[in-house]
Structures are given as C-alpha cells and as structure tokens.
Length: 312
Ligand code: B12
Image (cartoon, rainbow, N blue to C red; front, side):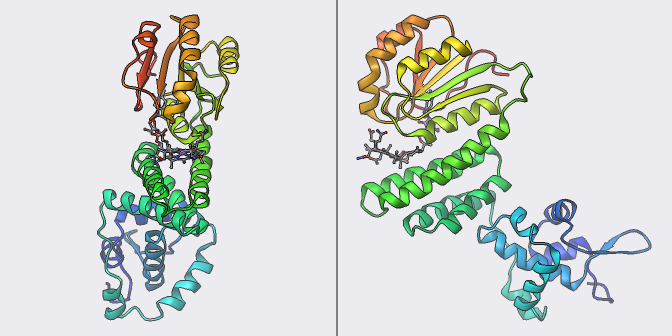
C-alpha cells in the first residue's frame, strides 16, 4: 500500500487473491473499479476498490456470474461491500484469504453445486453454477467437466433414490437451455458456407442432452447443425436428409431399449443413404459393434467422435 492508502494492481491482487489479469478484465469489461492515475500514468486502486474486489471474489466463488453482478452497477455493489466489510483491517484481510483453487477444482466445484442444487431442488444456485461455468470455461470444459459429470452423478443418485425425479428434471431442463444457447451462439452466420450436419435422438428416446452436446461440438468445429431434437421418427429423419442434403448425420440413442427398437429401421436408413453422408450412431445405448450396420457404412460410437471429412 502507498502512504496515501492506494494500491498498485499487484498489491490489490495479493490482498484480494484475484489475478491481475482478472482484475484488469473486470475493469475493462465492466468498469467496476475507479483507480486514480499517478503522474506516471500508473493506476492506484482505492480501499473501496479492494472492498469491492473482496466482496465480488466471494460472490463469484459462491457461484454467481460476474456479468450478472456487474449489471447491478458499481454503486449498488459498493454499498453492499461497505456494509459487509466496513473496516479493512488486518483481521478482515486474514478472514478473507486469497482463493487458491485450481481450474480443475473450480470445475469440480461447479459440477458438485449443480448436483447439490438438483438434490435440494434449488434453482437459484443451480443456474448460478451453470452461468458461472459458461462465463469462465471454454465450451468443451463446460461440456466435459461440468455437464457430463453432473448428469451422470444425478443419474446415479436418482437410481439410488437420493435425487427425486423433479430434481433431475430441474437440472436437465436448465442444462438443456444452456446447451441450446451454446448451439445457437456457436452457429456459423447465415449465408456463410459451412459443412452441414443433422443431429437427432433415436425414435422413442427423450434423452436430448447427450445429443445436444454432440451438436454443440459440431458447431465448435465450424459445422452448421440442423437440430431435430428428442424422439425423432425415422421418416422425419429421412425427410430432413432430403431437404438439407447433409455431409454428416448423428443419431443418438441413450437407452439400450430405444436403440434395439429402431435398429432395423436404422439399418434400412443407412443402406438407403449409403455414401451420401457420414452416418454416426452414438450414445450410451449403442452396442460395441453391429456388423450389418458397419457394412452399410454406419459408425457406432458410444462417445463423441468428430466427422472424418470437412472437419473445418
Ligand atoms: C437426464 C436423464 C433423463 C431425462 C432426459 C432429459 C434430457 N433433456 O436429456 C429424462 C427425464 C427424459 C429421462 C427419462 C428416462 N430415463 Co434417463 N437419464 C437421464 C440421466 C440422468 C442423464 C442423461 C444425460 O444427459 N447424460 C449426460 C450426457 C452428456 O451423457 P450421454 O448421454 O452419455 O452422452 C455422451 C455420449 O454418449 C455422447 N453421445 C451422445 N449421443 C451421441 C450420438 C453420437 C452420434 C455420438 C458420436 C456421440 C453421442 O456424447 C455425450 C457427451 O460425451 C441418465 C444418467 C446417465 N448416466 O447418463 C439417465 C438414464 C440415461 N436414464 C435411464 C432411464 C432408465 C430412463 C427412463 C426409462 C426412466 C423411466 N423409468 O421413465 C426414461 C426413458 C425416457 C425415454 N423414452 O427416453 C437410464 C438408462 C439405462 C439404459 N442404459 O437404458 C439412465 C442411465 C439412468 C440410470 N442410471 O439407470 N432420463
């Protein structure tokens, strides 16, 4: 601290436990701080800036999104921070030790918060954890480190009777909403040439989220996706292929029973379209191999697998 009670960015960072780059980004994007400029043009932060940084750090660690917080404006946030931290003495600073959690731990904490909020049927922290994930991680980290582990854990707890059907529905619908948003935001602009994929759930299969993750990964590779959604009849898939003429078709079967029920229909579909596009049939419900489907050009893949061609 300087003698005038002002801090350089390094000191603000050490006292708040927030990295200088993050503090600069919050300043650049949301103008949350009001540093003074020295004659040498260095920024000097005030005790109020430190208060605000400490206050925001704890809210964000608790799962709130910095974007949503910043929308409330510096003045409102600062008056809350002043109430919470009236004296910035050594004891206050000791009680607010810097956050040292790694990215891995933060992602695991977000996933755990999603699961906890589903069990407790509490939509606020559930939404906050998901939005914080979207704000701070890459789409791939969000999918593989937050959405997938949380969904699997919720499935286990549901099977053990520890998460209600309502809790699972709450989490699934909030996840679905975010996945759809990623799909929409990642889409190539209309008019720009891009390889096309059709993505659908198998007939009778209502597990959309795994298929949506696949669609999000495709747009991440620069593909344009026609998303057909849950339980798509094979006749409708046929029609979409006639009108979109896609380069790749992804069909998702999460239930073993839904794959079994449409396996012969999928074989006829694969034979009809053989050579026209890459056909992948995936999800937890597909078997390890199916010689007839493979001979008809379909690839069975329980996990995400990018298209071979035009991977943009
Ligand atoms: C959420 C959920 C639901 C929701 C789905 C909501 C939604 N919008 O998606 C609803 C309420 C609809 C539901 C219903 C049912 N469900 Co359910 N459900 C789940 C749960 C908890 C999460 C599914 C999920 O989103 N997983 C997360 C995604 C990310 O993982 P994923 O699906 O494996 O997908 C990954 C890969 O497989 C791959 N992928 C997926 N599709 C494709 C496609 C291609 C081409 C490729 C390459 C890759 C790929 O990409 C994903 C990311 O890596 C699972 C538990 C679990 N372990 O998954 C049970 C689970 C899938 N459900 C199950 C069951 C039994 C049911 C019901 C029969 C329950 C009932 N008695 O009513 C019904 C069936 C309804 C129907 N006809 O579809 C069982 C399935 C058992 C089985 N093997 O057949 C599970 C495993 C629960 C369990 N532990 O028993 N469910």
